[in-house]
Image (cartoon, rainbow, N blue to C red; front, top):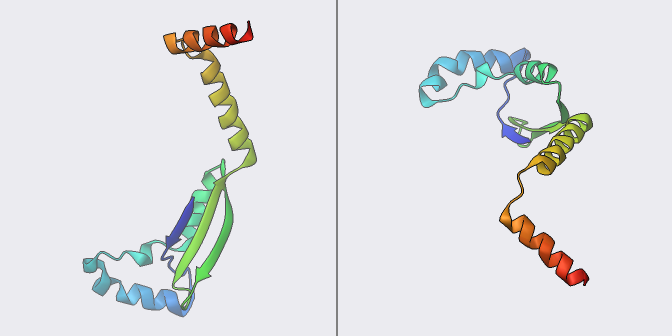
Length: 108
């Protein structure tokens, strides 16, 4: 998952300015001060099947951040096992039967 977002500062002068501007920008639909990096970090800590790949500021001034999150290798392997099991248990359709008979005829 790739997210390009405006991540608020957790501390410092930028955080101070964002909080002071909140009453002005909130009516415009900007809720930036509510989405500090700590909020993303807290979600990642609870999402056991996800991991942070990259987080970097995007120019100019690093006002936006590029955040890349992916499933862990164990989660991907579990998903593949589930898909394989679901495919093996799916009901046989007439299309499957005709494909099997077609392959049998080709083998003759």
